[in-house]
Length: 553
Image (tube, rainbow, N blue to C red; front, side, top):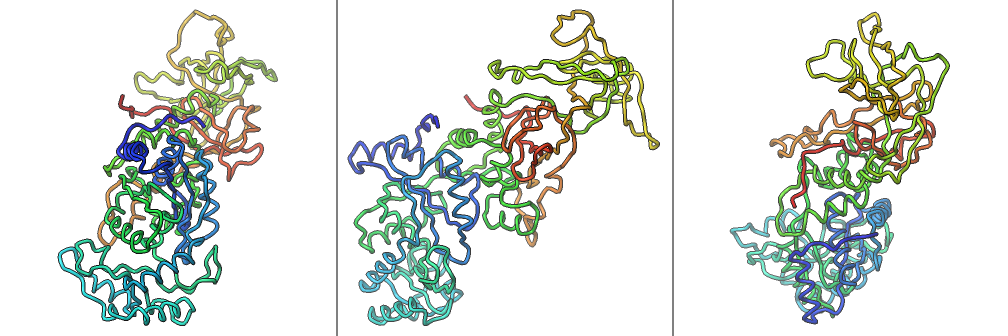
């Protein structure tokens, strides 16, 4: 995998300074997803940043699963995340789970209790929330805050032993209920959850909270630069408190950057799960989803996503990015790599009445006019072909240069044809055209006679391969928040998927899943890995051919 280094940014500059000053000898980063869903395009930015920073400065990156909530996590998500990271082109140095450190975390909690820095609280979640206070009012001490270390140690051990039901007790840090930072007002460190864990089974019934577990994981693994998104900035004092009070030998540091968000795109795991559960999409890998698996199935390439992440940059800003920018990079990646071929998505039969019956000739066509190294292919041509319905109008407006009665157009890589007769069904729908061709106008023959203004694509009717085409629009209609009392599901675009049946050239019959093509005048398409079958390919529209988006120089 070839990657050009990321442009200078404030995190990269911090790394450079830390290496120059000797503050660190080698940088260690980590990508720490919770395995409670599939990764999305926002995660791709974090993956890219952590791995490429380490790669550029010869450091290490760990893949670590923050699996501290057994109610939402599953091995399915673990495997999917590993596949996504590898597909993006990255390989981790260490593979870890937060659950690997449960015993160590428990022992550090005991240390906090002995130091008088943590206590067992019998208050309910609602009571704790009410006592926490507001941004303008300090919190109130829990009535259990002054329990002795001995009583807290006994209760905490009994919590671990399973004596108490879910929600009956928690372990809280003892910090400052009047702190201006609400995160420092005696946050919960452990809760009781009687549930089977995907990694530790039924070994535990108490589980650490993320804000307690995460800094310990970083410290245990020797992470030097703990990079996260800006919403964790307010939790940095707690992060530092946990590392210090738990007396960790290694002291990691947290740095925050603005998260990647796309216009008209939902990246909340909760909302994405709702789309899956409610059947609005056919799974986490639906090509309309912003998940990495959805982008992969649609046809985006790892390079296009990495280039997109690099171009969006790293800053503390939080503005949304236009998805057209991502589309630009997949076009750039495919324009010289994808074979160019012809596909008819909404077929209209054309009979060339003066072409010999029973005859087929093979015509030559370049596989990619911008990349001669891709060579040429042979395509059949005979008396009956299919063209696009949109390439014919019986009563066209002015400056319509495609096919209409009496008009002549060029068939790409073939001949000029002229429309003579229009055949309709009983309802008046056009079902067939009768045309004549001029054998002197064969493409590549050097014909210099009359000119035509229109060129249309086609496929040979006798040998064309039936194909399904899945055309996509944005899944979410706009970026506006849902109205009060409404649901974001009200903004789901009912026309986000259109399925049409058409034909492709016969050389496409052996197209493999994830093969990518540029269909003349339609766009770039990917062979769908879920629904394609031998002899009946299914193509996902990746992106149209043109966009108004321009990369700033």
